Image (cartoon, rainbow, N blue to C red):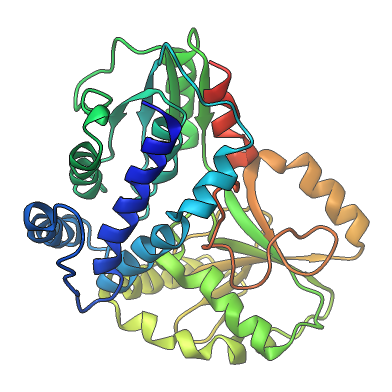
Length: 351
């Protein structure tokens, strides 16, 4: 199948998903195969939310909107123009997907299929309802996709390369199992922010999106901040007050109460405002409802730390030379913002 057909199919998918871009759904009779898929996708959204209580309406809608914005013909053409992607002998790529946020494995799904390869998917039980139906939709839009998209709940076999995403523990298993194949293996990463004290209230307000989107469960969610000595944390607490209603979500509240109790029993120094706790800690990965912080004296020294710990860091937010993402933008990656900084499409193009 030529690349233009693959791109066109994903553009049609974007049109289909646009019907689900708001919490109140809007059916568009001009969308291809809507009579077959609209109600079915609506049902799968319901099932996804029922099977994973972190997947509330707002988070699901945000995830879908993120992909609607990117499944545009100009964006897809520009992205793919950097690669060859004409596969006369397509390979089968095994993709092990995480399930921490909705549609978290979609970029790998998109990359494999646009690169001209076949995909064999093992989904997380936490996010298993949407992608199979999306695959069926693509097969109806472009019949040449039939046989190229397969899902499995069993041990994967008969593949040529692998892309696997998981925890630090599962990554060791992935290394053992996929080591003899060409592979990309991803483990735990977290995002951080470098604050100077000169940020505007508007910037810090947008920063709340980097902290609270997906309840902080994504690798692009900021879990730690670096601040200068004598930093005034009230700047953050005041600016993120708009996000206070997150504590009304029971699962988040339970995590807040549990972690707060642990910290208090351990007599840790703690700053909190009723829906977010700040704890001084050298670790990068903080629990839900907690933001770790660490003081810095010199930005050049901090940069050396980031260089040393680069395998633990996904994004760096802020305005300093150490930063790469603007406030409020961590959860709006572009097509070229590859997980762990590894160019997935180049990997697939080189097989």
